[in-house]
Length: 407
Image: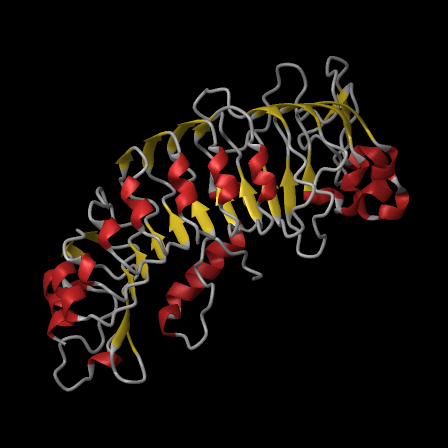
């Protein structure tokens, strides 16, 4: 109890958004807002997300005073957090310090049990924090929306249990390390909006459990982005989303591209804004035409199988134009999915143009607004916060950035 009370004292408890029960001598601490206990009455979770905490979080006092703690969530509070004493947190598996203006994580490598570490949207700078590689049990790592620089270390392969890796929206440069292909349990690989260069490693094709792969927007700072040929990723049966838009990939789209990817639950594949050539292959026929985007490349044609009226929808209505506007034409989507038909533009030599001559290309930006689930996620997140989602009996995956709202 005393350890919990230091949080209230040191972190401006009187100004918290929710503080029912705190510092009330008549209330058991297991009934305090944000405190979760085991059946035996031991504190196993502290969740004070976006609750108005400020000041210095008493890390050592809390972790030593609550040795049974398994989860600590301070996301969305402007607290100062250091890792002094975290080595004593023998049972701490989940640590969420996202949106806390965190600047340093020295000492995190001494936390023996950490499995899920969320450090998104902070002020972390400099190279990839090597202490992370001391966390042998790590399953989920979020370092996105920071200002990390340099290359992604090949030592990433030492995190044998990693299932989720989000290091997007940083300033990483250099090649994607081949060693990432050794992370056989990886479900999510999110590297978008950095300044990565070179080819997509063929080793990524061995990640048979991969659901989400996002390597898009590597040219946002004016660099070359990813180059070379597009691997086929033919055997990734479980893939749900594949995004490499806004790079400089060239060559043709492989005839066996995403060959074994299951249609059920598939969301989209985005190959737009590259330098891909040749025809759009028939292998994409299994997907809805709205689920794949190959616009703004150097495409010279569309395989006839993709234009079959039996596919229904926009293809039945507009034929091949639903896949890509032909050479010599364009519209804002680069294809006709509604009544906005493909307009004449004789100077466009390739299929799928979204602009004509000097007309500005409809730009996309590496933000949440490019995500088709963005509006839904925002509304659902607000719903969760407004109705005290942290206190719900069932709240699995709510506010989990890695999950689709439908999962």
